Length: 407
Length: 158
Image (cartoon, rainbow over all chains, first blue to last red):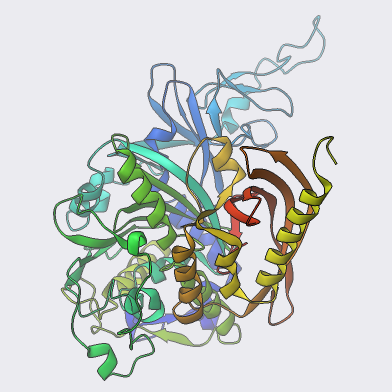
């Protein structure tokens, strides 16, 4: 237990037991995912009409999101009140009602238990006593809010509205991307061999992008010499980083002798995979935005996606990618987005390394729960910055995590 | 073999699939684009997206130049743990399409072998191909993976 003490340095150190400890994992489920946070559930467009549903997760907890006959959104725990079985097995669809296969207990779109099979027995025999109260174990209901086509849920009755939760630093950057109704282009899952927080601090780490992802640097897509910055919410929980489209002509990488340097002779034969249309009119080439605990929205050139981080144990994480465009995209824009999908995901030119690097950390720290990582780029503060050679957003993650976990 | 399918064509297509598999499994990635026509298309899809009518690919390339870019990036830019594939391809069914083009559907399993010896079933699914008979090259190869789930990363093409 002694090893559970946080290092005296504060947010510039992250002890490695946070990625390894089963008890921490269980506490995170209660204090963070089922606690006072807003969790991404799905896109609104995945529920196109009344009675549509999708199944998703909040941390470990399986969740059904459904529209009732009037079109209103509901989210509830995918667990039968009777014996705890999954009520809904399909990934998505439409349904008149939800019936647990085990004993046919039935739920409406809002997750209310509407029917218990043979509740009153048959012919006066069997059934439940009159004072039985199976509703007392009904699936938990989530508060649901959607924002510009993204649906979030929380089990907390206390947490502020979704917009207030995100806060004024990051909210405008979310709205910047979600300007019109969305259209799903497809989805897949990337399985990461590491703790969920290693992925989140990778996402918030603006320092690594052009050093680990050499494709960026080789083709001068994103070098730290390009103009960009990072916004961090006051509590440290959420962040957004961006890079402008201007191609850099400097040779800072070459002067430092970095592995990613030496790009002079390296050019794509077919650069269509990089050709960006400035669709938001602000010359931003890349924007990565994260919301605590497990949501990422990216704009990488014209590739747009929601990434849902689903923890599956201390050393396994599923990343549910949903790539989308806008409902009114023309054929050329759809084709552009599909081609630029090569930049992202498990085979992404500029993202395939993330799974490897975070997995290497999980493996590297196996013998050192008593050691900590060093997070001092840009000092020891948490806040917005106009340089990306900083780890301010990573420190923000740990500031927020410690607050939720009381560590 | 279906009635009316030329046994020589069947053998030629199976040989193409076999040469393709051996090139990838032996890390001769530079040969990969040469199995396609100049404007040949390659796409790794998932059965789920295909069934939902969603066009997204996990990896795609339009034409040999884009395939060569992918190989260049794997060789010189992308960083991943050393690994090999082992392809198992079977149940090759041919259907004649337009003049000079045959459609092939074949099952595959790809094992992934990491340097520490860890060997896993990395992917299974179907190759759905349009093959130009005279050149015996893929005009289109769609790799439809049975699962939507990819472990860690997908570097080498399937």
